[in-house]
Image 1 (tube, rainbow over the protein chains, first blue to last red):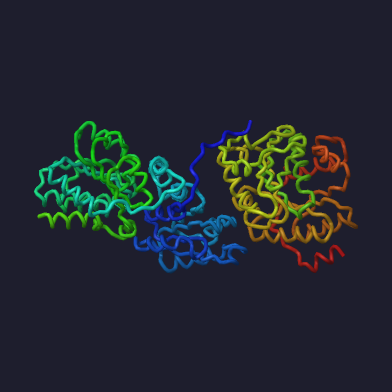
Image 2: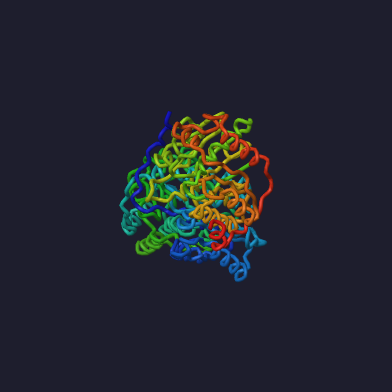
Length: 375
Length: 261
């Protein structure tokens, strides 16, 4: 009679990406002007700061002990009024925190009291979810309710987010109860190996499978491989695949795809295959697999940047695989998948906020410098 | 659909009143749901022949996939019973439990929509945000206060009315559960009037209630012909027919002492 137990999930030992932060990034992607965090002043500080680099204003109700005990309704009302006065926003997000959600704060009551004439997206979220994509889904549901997101796009996003969660469970940072952080292989040694392969005219596939704005830096690596091959006078065949479809996803994400594609063109890099949009990194794997099997069999090596663990190994077998991630906890799972060389672009994400051009990567810079020395 | 909550001092008889009203309404042919929001999970026990049902929170704690049939149980004459459940005294956060359980119920069940009467049985005073969740989430449209004619229960009832005022909630009536205080009906009547409301029912103290509860039943089920069953039936009918409400004006403490003096 008792209900069936859910399948066992690995224990969580290291802190995981926060659903509160995920909700804030989602509001940024929806081009919300101001986010009010309803909770303690220290909550999500680092990402609040980073989001400011990206043009989103983040303020807090700064709940203290007395706020926890007596509730923070008045604080929320006051800051909501102040934000409207100071910033004249076209849309506002209110994001919950663990503290305000546990004490049962009703975000909607403050909105009713202030009654702003711009849309307010109320996101009742805390950081106690296993998957941070839960924060994205809650934010999107609220955006749908506030009328700033279409039903169709909402359903599309939900599918992608569920896939993203699956990818992390399969081969990502959620795949084991504990993953030792690692910087991966040294960029110097790996760059040397790529240069050697190019000098031997080996056939190369580069795959940019990036998550949204992180593409601004990951694309620099794909570009560097092409540029270096040219500079070295290599006769390697290089096929470039990238998830830079600019007709899919939220406006902000499409703009990133356009910007990156424009810069790649400017750097003389041709993208041969578009494998999806910048929010489709969890679902591009099959397309890549099919393309390799049908159009590009028999290549010697592959350079995969962004979310390399979303690309299945099926048709990569036999190639020497170079992958670049920005997650120190992603190194071990990638090695276990069979990637030969795994590198980490540390602190990549902060450097891709507030930009609209490709930014130089450490590995791209290493490749270029080593190639110059070779010439 | 009537969505009601009965508030009052702990131990004053909210659960007894709620289950008897639920049973009486079921007798009249209404479809009734009762949501027990007390971590002790004892709101529905007298509608289920003394049996306890698994609570939403204990199933969530076991991390099982919860479906409607795991947490919604049919009791006396089809009254649907749900217990939110919650932590043992002294640990965790029972208020958060109510918020989480109600959200979960809305997702997995229509029990909170498809009925004529839904009763939220909420413990004691509204001590924290979570206990007000049914009201604040717009799930309750009628609220009743239960009290005796003694000073402390009246003080609690008055305090709860202050809570209503701040939550923007109305008061639909005062119910007196007698503890045989002197002049009790007159005192509670005056209290109700001064709040701006009125006394909906005076439930006399009767050992039958205790006897039935000990056996695991409501008075309506076990002693349907008793005088007190008639009182509960009358109360049930007034709740179903009632559509007047007031914004309660809480009394001063001095006035409360004067009333009960």
